[in-house]
Length: 324
Image (cartoon, rainbow, N blue to C red; front, side):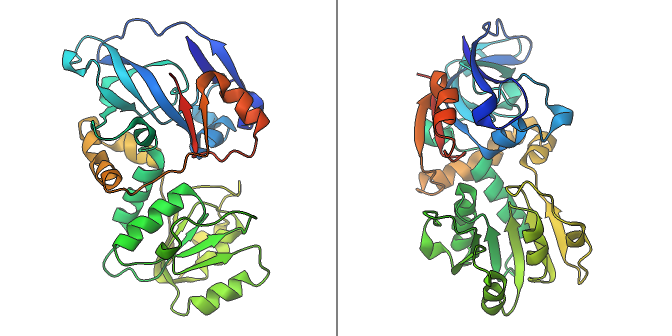
């Protein structure tokens, strides 16, 4: 069968290659094989392939943290009724192959009314956004800011906040052609490419922010900590800058604090039998027409390495990989 492997650490366009590998064979106790239907390229794939998590990543390996497939065979201890069911095989990389062998307990059932093109995007961005807002946003939350506001996950965050009656301030780099989704969800959008952007933020933010969702890190985080209200929280969940938050972010005083959010930690600490319930609100919002992910490119698995080489500007998180 076909699989795309990351042969060594590096950027996706340089280190991926298509291979023919053996079929996974007969599933063992509590295991299933899932024939993949569709998958995605998520920023978490790019970070892992870069070698950022060297202590838990051995190369070569098959990337792909999210996707949807059909249970094709089951091992002992797995109910036969699971055969033919659509699932999200989460909990590990390995979705960039035609058939994935995994534990049945890591398979989240997909409702019949959620199409494959939505289901394959239902995991990392929507679930992260939902959990962060649920954990950190209360009735007392006032002003909120979101960095990386042009990203898909930022649009999900803004959507959930808007439902709560909060219009966040979006912070973007100001890359030509980039824009936030659903502008009416945002109270303002500030570009850090402007020399006086911090002054603009200060002028806009007279009362300071109660909550900041940050996926950028680096010096931007230190600047934003100064715009947090006493007792405010900066939720740090990504590292688009490639630079960690400086130490001053963790010693700001005034009861300001940084909370690190890692979806992997949440998922792996969650009871497996409760994982399907964790996705219930995500599927409900998808039914309501929310949590939309724009598909910027669609490619068969066999064409993935070449597409990334030819279109190095393709945005992770907006690519659909088809296995048909």
